Image 1 (cartoon, rainbow, N blue to C red):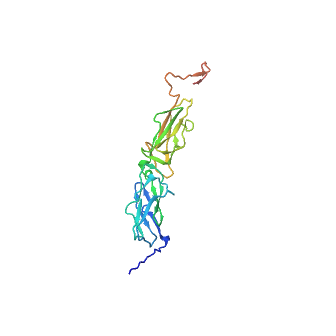
Image 2 (cartoon, rainbow, N blue to C red; image 1 turned 90 degrees about the vertical axis):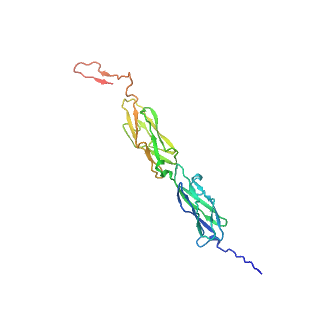
Image 3 (cartoon, rainbow, N blue to C red; image 1 turned 60 degrees about the horizontal axis):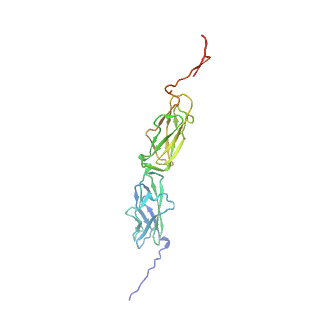
Length: 272
């Protein structure tokens, strides 16, 4: 004679919940992290629990190209209250983009369980690497003519681009040329991408004058406190060539005397 006994699972359904945690919650580009999964304190499962891993788009700033899901599912082995994967689950991809640190939220799904996902921050390594934050300026190399439009170019290293706005402050100028009279240059300019240029307008006049110089000391910043360096020099030296001087060959200066004739002991005014 035999008897069958059925044991009903009366575990509180509210305890059928899992929590996912990234072992490294702040992840540098190029690094990866394992995940920890846990049931409520004191609980375990009689069977392995398979948890599907996906990106949670709610609150996530990271693009798909910024990270990889290395394991589409992870397993909490039976009999365990908590378990940490032996292999990495998420990796942060390297790139050459100057960008903000970005939030990444990961969801989990397991049959019969409520799963609380994990949150990570991907740290941008590009803007924390000095070689990537050097901005090279290309001012006009020759003396600039009056009545001309010039530009001061600037660029990040080859292959590096900016996703966040970078401000080029051009307000600090000195020299014999007078700003907003002899020339016009914006106080600042903002760019994204790999390069940009600021317009430099050189004004004309009818004055005979020597060459004039402009010295610009750029300052560079963004909204995240990134340290930028300037190349090839910290100060940009420019010059304006006068349209009237030096005189062209064959030109002459006409002098007139008032009065035109004077006697000994008298004086006259000479006008050029």
